[in-house]
Amino acid sequence: MIAKCDRRDYNDRMTSIYVRDVSENALTTLKVRAARAGQSLQGYIRQLLEAEATTLTPEEAASQARAIAARSTVTADDTLAAIDEMRRARQ
Image 1 (tube, rainbow, N blue to C red):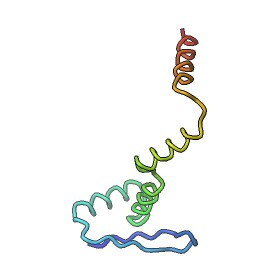
Image 2 (cartoon, rainbow, N blue to C red):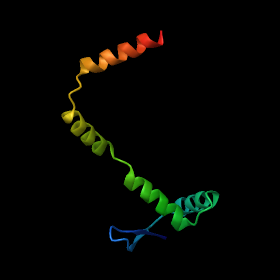
Image 3 (tube, one colour):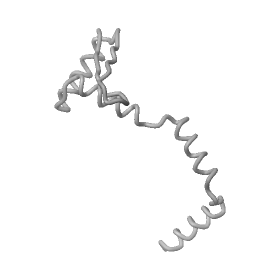
Image 4 (cartoon, helix red, strand yellow):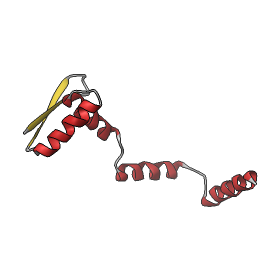
């Protein structure tokens, strides 16, 4: 099986991705999900790929968190004090 998915690249041109050796079961499942979502198979797979591409991996998220923390002047004591203050305010 070959599944085709088109998307726009950074120059706003359409590019193609071909996926070979997709099992019949996986293809059927994707077709059913696409139909339930009111989308073509191509549109559904494109949406999945775009969502995956915009989601940070755990490593990317950790790297960004470290970069933010490195720029921060907030200490662990500041954080604990803020939590205590919020708890007291709820009582």
